[in-house]
Image (cartoon, rainbow, N blue to C red; front, side):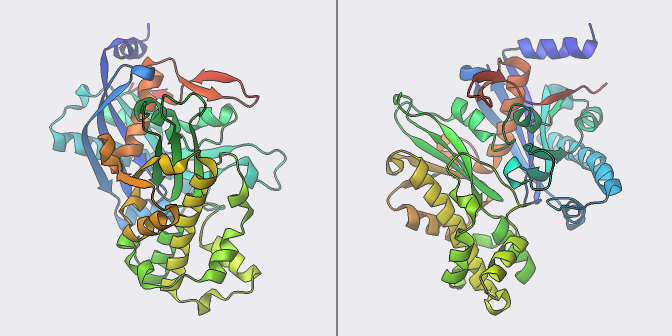
Length: 403
């Protein structure tokens, strides 16, 4: 037997596994590194988050990634180089974190690497192609990470999702159902990253309801775009700029008219769709001159857009949403003004920080991929509804050995 496969079989047979989850989101602000001790698999999965850190990217690293992220035209030489470069950089950050925590790499069973999404392209957004295919692309090669860290690495999780008819996102619900459901409390797990999404988890005692997940549209991405363009800031801290402006109702109404918001089924999107050009094009079509709208008013308007579209999705799709407790995570959970607007639109619904479920909210996405890797190694897979409505067990990720 291949020694690497033999080692993997031993890890799979252990009672628990030590797995590092890695997540780098569309904000390009850094790499989330979550060290997890995971016991069991499937419905018996239990996670202990033992260490967590975010390693911030320098402006140099961000500038490189921006060249190829969420843009239609790139240099193939640049893309090829960054696929390798980013993986070696992530490996360096993993080793750096382990050294800071006083942990030997040999003590880690597996690295679960999400990589960097550089383009997300659902079939609904494809025009001019001979065939519509759900497509998504992440870089940071798993073999490079495995070779540099000496740790078995699982990566490229989203491709199996698209291969069986999914859009490759959002994937959080697969793990949300395992870890965060409750017998008595109906829950909404709201993640406000560049794109906002939520998972609805009905109380376990309610047989008439089923869980689901969906993107709702922009979370932070338009806010971050405008903060950078007008104020040279990476984000609007606490929503201070937006809260100083006034919502432009004409611009808001124009943006809300986009047909994307009217689709009722679960869906995904990315900054490839929702970006500054999207704002400009819709404003121009409506005869609005963005140059005549103050920058702080534009920020107030796109913040309101995020709040309204999140709230309306919940109201329309979640049965009895007012009885649910909403647990928030993601960078947008730190934007006090955005949360205040969201609470205004949702009325008396109870909001809680994700720490109420026992985890650092900033670590959630990295933890999600650690659990996906654990299931790949030791579990039977996740229930997944295929193209024809059939439910099958699927595992996600590709395995890379150090040697």
